[in-house]
Length: 137
Ligand code: HEC
Image 1 (cartoon, rainbow, N blue to C red):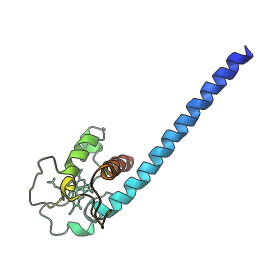
Image 2: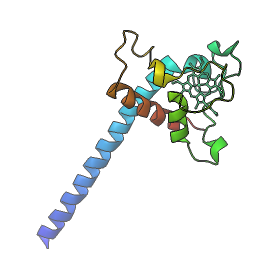
Image 3: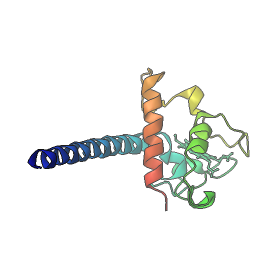
Image 4: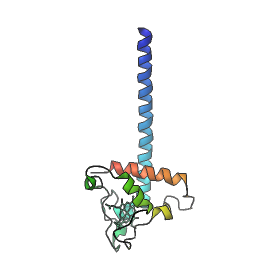
């Protein structure tokens, strides 16, 4: 009986530890995503994703807010859409609208000295998506 309780307690502790690790990993990712956002997106989409950042003047189409992505998509954060849009894989409403195709340019402000190819960028993009998901209103 006592042994069984010990096993159960052990499993409980293991589950708790892995939950804590998972949420810590997610926190790290979100804070990385916030940095990527500030460097690559805020100038157009606003400091908090509210749209109309300082660089949006003079663009063909005003950069939409990004805090309403979930609300505009039936309450579901369109992660895959955002990923493809950011990489430049989707048709844009206005080809002159000047949103960079980050799949081609890389995150140039995060990596001003180059070296933005490969795994780092994939992780940065996931982090950016994790962050954007947290700012939805
Ligand atoms: C130079 C300004 C500029 C920068 C920098 C920029 N965007 Fe955009 N973004 C735009 C414009 C303009 C549009 C509207 C274009 C269109 O729909 O054709 C847009 C549209 C979008 C959309 C589609 C939104 C919707 O509701 O359809 C997403 C998602 C998006 N941007 C995410 C990002 C992310 C994430 C970053 C940073 C990695 C970023 N953008 C950087 C200008 C910019």
